[in-house]
Image 1 (spheres, rainbow, N blue to C red):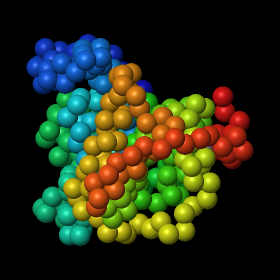
Image 2 (image 1 turned 180 degrees about the horizontal axis):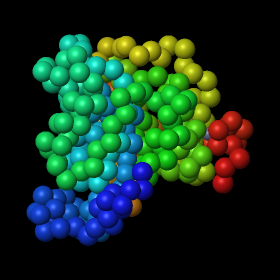
Image 3 (image 1 turned 180 degrees about the vertical axis):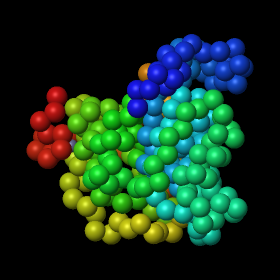
Image 4 (image 1 turned 60 degrees about the horizontal axis):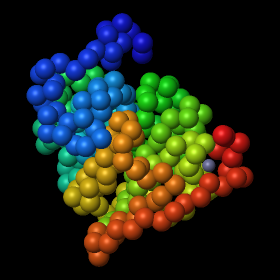
Length: 258
Ligand SMILES: [Zn+2]
């Protein structure tokens, strides 16, 4: 991963052309040019770039995160297109990550984008997490989520958890050793969780955008991330609330971490 061109790119100062693109967000108090430089220097892994992760990736690409690593297996199918906003009709039958990378490069050709045409597994989790500074977890299955949680805790890097079902959604941000990890929150795989579920693209994209907002704040070091807080969104009633969550001192994953 540490090839020379990448390091040169990552240490480079903002150019005038970049300042031009990011002007409006550099007006955000506490963010500014320093925050923009932090985004340019950052690497983010997005696990699955479908309904939630695609929106997260799009927002992070637009914001100027310097390097995105996309992990998502399989080819585009017609029934992806109601929600996987980076996939296009003419991409049906081709790898999802290729469609996603193409759309992101169209939006922001300055970005470095790495793709893995595979979902998170025991074989690739450590390798992918070692490449990045922050992980945005948008996978529907707990077996993938637990692997990312384990590796993020091992490396002590922030992990943003975005999840949804039907019209409900949850987001929290994990700072290993400081906040509850995913296993503190869900010690065992919830039995009802499944890969296929009712979903509108609008709800998935909202959650992805919230996850991207958390990533931007965490990378740039401003605002209050959802550390030790779980955001619960009910878009059927359009109510949002946050609840405090606590570390489990006996957690099998982060219990011994300081
Ligand atoms: Zn834990």
